[in-house]
Amino acid sequence: MAKTRMVTQFGLGTSIRSQDYTQAAARAIRDALWHNSLNVATAFDFPREAMLIDVEIGVQKPEAVDSTALLDIFPYGQPTIRVVRGGLDVCKPDGSDPTVIANAAIVVSFDMERNHD
Image 1 (tube, rainbow, N blue to C red):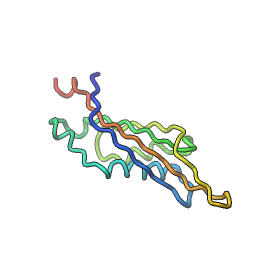
Image 2 (cartoon, one colour):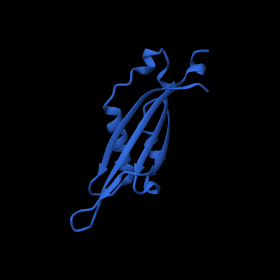
Image 3 (cartoon, rainbow, N blue to C red):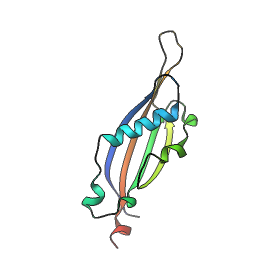
Image 4 (cartoon, rainbow, N blue to C red):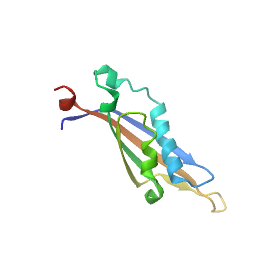
């Protein structure tokens, strides 16, 4: 496959009170997506469904993220999600109830050979 990277987007999301790693990851994805208007499919005359979307999420507890729930954020394209250790948990001054911070990196690509045959 001749996968060609077109766009890289970054985002940050938090869960301030509930320590919900999936919620923080979802907010990071939305933050990355809302910073951009992806017209790249149209610009290259590809259907939006042909977008290959690789998502990497960094949080302190990757096992606490429901990756399947995050797929629903994407209205089109072919997303794959990988969760790794990263992000940041910031405890309150008394050491309790951390704020969960997630980072997202989203790479949008196309299979140039398949889409231009």
